[in-house]
Amino acid sequence: MAANERQVFMVTAAKRHGKSTTVRSIAEAMDKNILVYKQGSKINDPAFIGYPVMPLSKYTGGKAIIDGGRIEYEDFLRQVYKYFRNGVVVIDDAAHYETNDPSKPLKRILIDCRSLGIDVIMVFHSLEDTPVRLFGYTDLLILGYCGGNFEYKLRKLPEGTEITEASRDIKAIVRACRCESQKPCKCGRRYVRRVIKLT
Image (cartoon, rainbow, N blue to C red; front, top):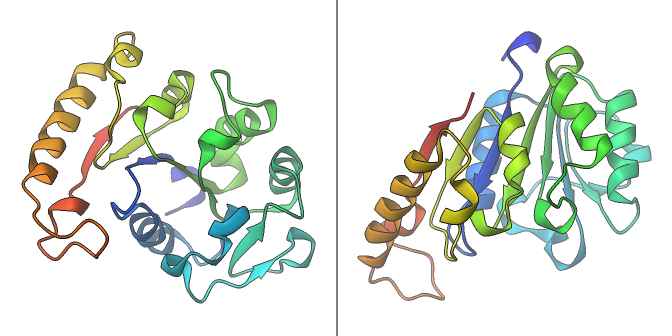
């Protein structure tokens, strides 16, 4: 993508429904410079095998997982805004860091992503955990299977009905999956996706 076509993506799906694989595919299709912000036990995510784990201060380009245990989330975003250009920033488990109002450092990146040359991918486990105000900054929602009651959050969104219908459709498809829950899905139903354009 060209710098003036930079976009903000939201990827939402439950555990073991292929979020990380989807995110890696999207990110690698967009750019060679990819920063994935992760922390805790998910640092060594098998979906990002080959991505070195490093502190942001040692990043010089290419693909990397930035260890959230070494740098606070908002400090990470401030440094991205200052120094990172022409690449993709992935915020894994964004519900840990973002609540109803987007944090100021994230809002700056989302507003200026085109001029900075940054694509942003925010990853959530459920629409229930997704801050509604982030939808206003998001270009594309990549929707996978989600549990929980989230319809009440979508009433004010123009795309709320479309998101709800897509989610119900996905739930019906995933429920038809008979693969064992602890093993990779063989029929592919568990990884079904819908793309919803928000802007």
